[in-house]
Image (spheres, helix red, strand yellow):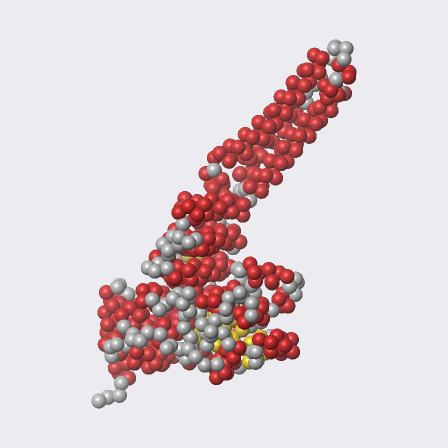
Length: 389
Length: 163
């Protein structure tokens, strides 16, 4: 009885080579994640080989047994004679078919398991195990997910990671133990996924998804007292909104501005964070010639100021600083700033010139030299515009 | 206290943003918020109270699965999903929660490409009577005028709803 060694060897080489081949065909960021899970990688390589080895060993054993028993008188009636019938060809066809089946199943399983969305889902599920246990996602898995997002191509690939982060954020915030301190890594990670210094690594769609995600984070985070997550989310909104000013589309930064509206800005600290973010976005929008975004920022700052009985401190400084940036933006900008100031001036605890001086000193102290100069110019301009006497 | 809060639910606003929003920011009389899909609209309507809500009827679902399913069910003619209308019904009739105090039909207006006969019966059922059809060549101040019309109908100041 001959053993089809050529066919068996070919299938074994295929079984050994398939995981390596598939692994090489994956994007580097996915390969890195898969290599971290060594046991899974080993089991995908060893288990099919082991199974195939058992089948071949069983085939050889049966073939030999058939040869030995051939001379026995009752052999033709035995089950073994049926198995090794036609010189063992049926047996080896069955074994080879099984080996091909194992190869096929391995190929299907590997390509399913190593699909990008499957890897992301796995990472998300692993990270989510920490939510029930500690009230926050497991940091190591979460960082793996963020790293994957960071190195993924912009567009759909990054969006898959962002969606997973959104689900983790939502699960964390609906957990009873959520107190506004659990999402630091996730929120900072969002920025890492989308920006690298002043450069954006995300597509319009990615920035869009992140704006939604941050808006969803802000609502429950704002309900918690002394929420660090809220502060981080507001900072992320400011950073990402300013980054997407590079796109010609002004709807996107507006979307980030809208997310700020979901803060319970009645709380003093939240109002301060919000006003700082509005100043940062608005001033950079003017510099980028996105005047409508800047107007929206100042309008929201005005809305925030109007809800306060008196206007002082950081909120007043941010308001005046943003108005000063408009002041520097040509004649129309000056008129717009004047109109806004006329409306809000009675709300300041100080007289307008004093409030401007205080804002200028604050900007000089906090290293916003350009804004400080704009405020000085506006103060001078307002004094010159005052009727003599 | 504060300026009247307005919500404008509109997905195609990005194309006419400066024309329609410019007059609103320039007059500085209102605090305007924008929502471009059903998820964002629901988020705002759930968290903030408004003095006027201007609603588009053809809006995309956004991330929320409930709205996404509704949108998918509309088949190839996505316009027939009319998620703006679904949001209004959700707010006025069927979200399982008591309707917020500020939600009154006179505070709502519809600004959409649909013709009045298409959505008229639904709007009547909801008690919404302010409707402006979007058509080419509208004035830049159309949104501002619509807001003013709604504010004349319903009174009161907006505030963030405490949860």
